[in-house]
Image 1 (cartoon, rainbow, N blue to C red):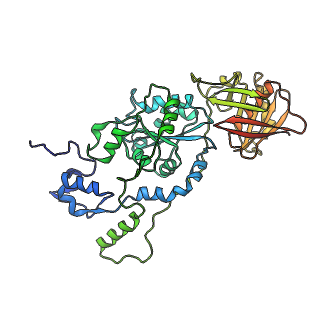
Image 2: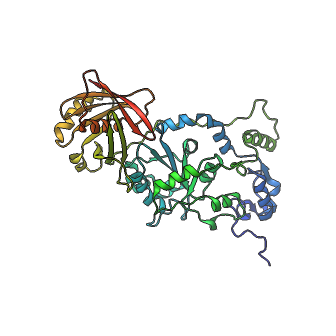
Image 3: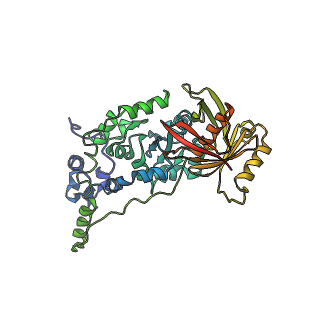
Length: 441
């Protein structure tokens, strides 16, 4: 058979049309990361074998070197104790997770459900989209398509400078058949595939085998159950990075050796090193969509769960509505039980915590508590009775100050009163208990 042994669709970058000009390689060095790629190159384009060089994967090496800083990357994304960071990623392809902007694309329709179904204090969501998605559709269109999810707490990751750090920080990755999903698996992170088009991959490539075997996301099924099942059942492979690089940690040395050989120059004596991954700017979740808050009060302990939607398995004995002052629909504020915003204590535009909280309660008669968040672990609140209270995280506490404010509202609605010397609430969320000091201003 004339087609026997021929790969139906060669891996991107290894076919003759990419590597040859007039039947000869037009590159001085074709860098491959693993001998498996060299074997496929010999089958698909043997003319280019002489130009190939095995030099590992500098992108993966930078991630390996940055692994000790995982907790810093998590803090940069505002991931709190007990929270799970779920990173969604899409390659640039009509069959990818993001798709081509059509009505049948998985990611844009899935994101609002994720932000609605996953409790805000249990999960943190971020998305890594291929740079060509941003270029092809334009940043304005991307943000418009994902606006609802962003208001629900999704953060869009810089696709050039911060995606590796996001992968290192992730607890789980939901993606497609692109390299980012494969890198995630190589790092030992659980991966759930939402799009797994087989015809775009060389069937003999390790990536194709990974796509065939990885668990699938059911976009119509309960999302929280699928994410939690992925995290519970995941067992990292014995050598998850087996086919990513045959020389982990050595790409800088191998690449420099090859470059200087091409220039016919002696190598420098200093070791070859890669630029370390920078620490991204602090980008905590910002939720301006209204939050449905469910609570259960037992003495000074308040269990709390906050979501932008109404999950079918939601738990709680009492409910209230917490709304950010920057909500898209100002009408939400007229029904809010708790109104929240963030700001510096000395922000002249807002007048500070005490002035802002008083203004909010005057403007919205239905509101029972206004909370001004002044830092990642504290806020100032004013109740309808005129109390001004400072809430601050106690030892070991690490939940959102807005959650502390909602817990205080539920506790007071159940009859709790703050004594002159203050009190401590135990806020139960994200699988832990967070002691919160409540003190009169």
